[in-house]
Length: 247
Picture 1 (spheres, helix red, strand yellow):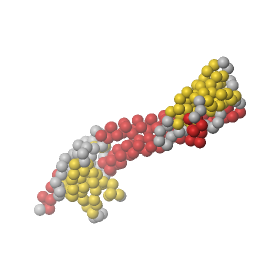
Picture 2 (cartoon, rainbow, N blue to C red; picture 1 turned 30 degrees about the vertical axis):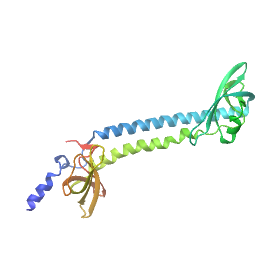
Picture 3 (spheres, helix red, strand yellow; picture 1 turned 135 degrees about the vertical axis):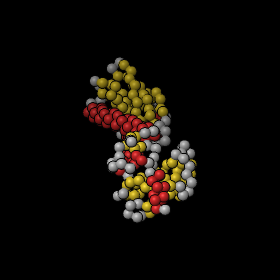
């Protein structure tokens, strides 16, 4: 009886999991897409961070130059574009300097919006040697927080995708294989099933877990699960979606 029980248990453990640890692993399927997506998002976030940093430094230099040496003239409003929820409206204006016409843009603080809306003219401050450096004279530059706020979100999203792959790889490479009993199974709406299961760890503790399954599983069915002995709550069904063992 014991021999049959051990044979039945061994059948749920794939042969590639029987070797020495750490196992050789390979990112496959969905894992490749998540890895590429995470790297692209991180690369874009780094590019945006560098670009924003350069832009902030340039704005600071222009602001300092205008404060120390400027000419103020009367310009005229060309267009006022609503900034949307939580953002300042954007003003486009023209002015004349050194016999030529120039165009500028600026965000309009809420405190000055009413005057800008009801007037077609405004005072413009510009740099005599370079009129392309200009700004409305009635308010200061304000930080472009709208460029900065998305960056932590982008970094977080990129790291989240990569971390999902790395965490699964850690379990697959170093996890202990064990038979687990299905306690619940339901379709997840993404081409697979979400299963819940129970197993007994090496230290005798009863552990519950959940994860993805490619097929529907009856309650009580035995499946292979990998877990980290030092932290049995880090567990998942095998094979998973992201990382497989290389034979």
